[in-house]
Image (tube, rainbow, N blue to C red; front, top):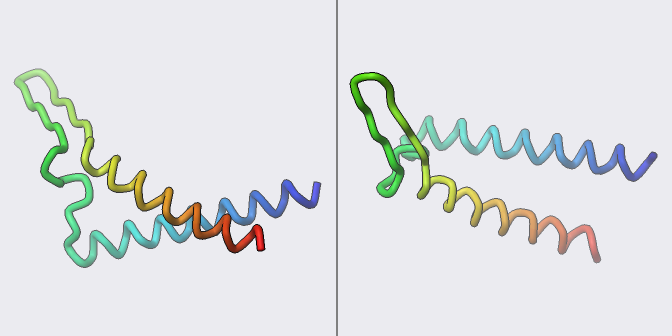
Length: 75
């Protein structure tokens, strides 16, 4: 049970850091969600939006972050 609580706390800290990063990125004008390569189709009856480039960028950054954290935990 102790291991589960540790993972939940680390997950909460991770989400807090990611949320703070997204908040700061929007404050400094980083166009997350409006990058070139993000697909946006707007029609008369609706719209479709798929952030391809933003998803790839976030995936790379999160992979780097998780690898750094795992290196510190597996000393």
